[in-house]
Length: 386
Image 1 (tube, rainbow, N blue to C red):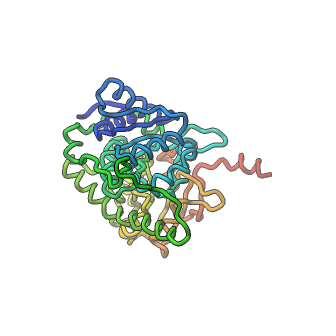
Image 2 (image 1 turned 90 degrees about the horizontal axis):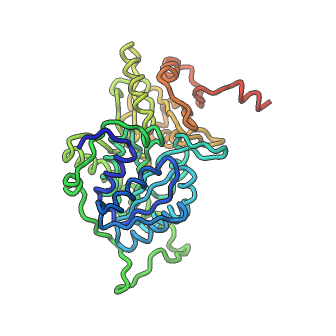
Image 3 (image 1 turned 45 degrees about the vertical axis):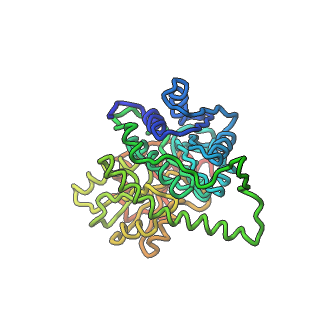
């Protein structure tokens, strides 16, 4: 049903229709509205049976999700920024145990200095934690990705992060088609855990593993991620047929067919990029956009296919690998090692990425350095460096 609704509340309603049995929460902006809305649904009996667990920290939230999932419950939580870092140890436990937990990350900058605005430093810092990472371009896609995430997680027995830009999406009110309970029930099977802690049939999971087996454990985790590259587009295809709209998948090309310059990005900035590309293409500039919906596992083959005719690839990054440069760029280089690749760091700490700045960037693409900071206040940094 289409409604004029805040992105966070659309995600909460959609998650509720996925019938989680345990929701554990610790509030941190900008994800608080999601778990707050879920708590109201649980308290009212609208979401039942479901236990809403208030915890003392983000580490506690993920620990409860791990216990719930291991005991056979469909588990969900949400976090952001420092909260994601606080649960980092438990993130590795969730993936290492093969638990199909779904978590929303409302992307927000990491301090110090403290900054509550949006960039993607938090989730990208956990790219090697063993979680599948999906990035939403819009609030509609954010809602849709959660339905797909539970199915992907449970088919693969892997945890899934759905990343949506904090404030830009979480607090934006717009028309969103929130899936109905009947639609979600038809698309998402009842949860049947592959492993279950049962007092009547005791087993041990997550026990000590020595050097003789640890490499094999890690290899198997890697193999499951490679399998996800087949599962994710299949689930997205099933979703498109059931819901009559396209959402999810690995990558989303826009104007790439004849593009000489292709910009790669994740998340909500794709909307601004597409508007800029439309404007430039009307003026004869052959430029396209490649949106990455799936960042982990990284879809090398899909990226390579989309960029096969591009002479210049620009990776627009909303996070910085300090001392190195572009985080996403490193993976893109593995897809197109022969192409000219430029990294543009933009939007850190919520700084606006405007069409005017992007238009200037793309019209002067031939002069780009390998690493550029969009709208950098050079007088400030030069004074401080001096």
